[in-house]
Length: 283
Image 1 (spheres, rainbow, N blue to C red):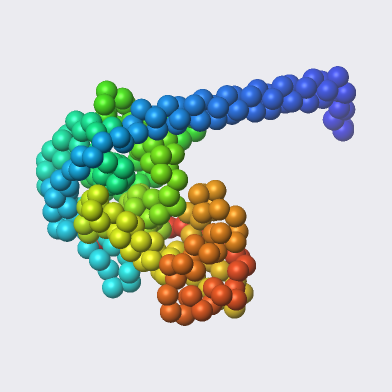
Image 2 (cartoon, rainbow, N blue to C red):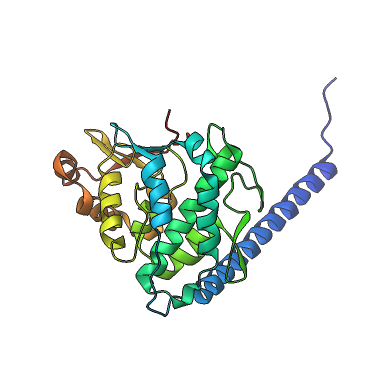
């Protein structure tokens, strides 16, 4: 016997779904508005106004010891070795969280946030190591979140901060510099390399330029073929930071070298995006 459809019940179901959809949209809108307000507040709270610089040599020593450049152009981390030296990493993090950011110069603050983010990311990974991907670390901290980025893991100037707060609400909001994306490392193969040196106020511009050049010229950054370009999802997720299509392409051309630079002059079509979330682990 065929199942008869009740038009009243169907209408009610449609109405219920419409109300639920509206509720979700309103919730998402309120969350977005709240996040934007929070970002503006954090950026203002941590605006660098001074001339002080910092010594990051302790972190630099750890990076030079445990970050291993690969012959494939990808830097990987000896997490097993770093885990044994975690007390040194935590001592650096403790010292950095006691810093008065407004007393720093602009370049010192930019280096500070990148180093703090990268150091805490390393600390999170070694705490939960081993794993296949940083996304396997589910610390919650937000609505439908995955990974460690939303959890309040740091405290600077009496303010609890997440890794997302550091990268998006503070650094990106303060400097609006697309090169920042080459400095922050998310412990993944698809991410721009974790540098073997700590960032510093004196060298940060050269370091970020070097990091941009290394990533753009690596196949996981920008790869050109006769069919078009295959680029990192980083350039899709943060497209607003790189500008419109022409500006983004000009950014690639600025840092491209050799055959890639030649190919980019006549190849502007992005055919695919990709990203490898595998842990950047040295084996």
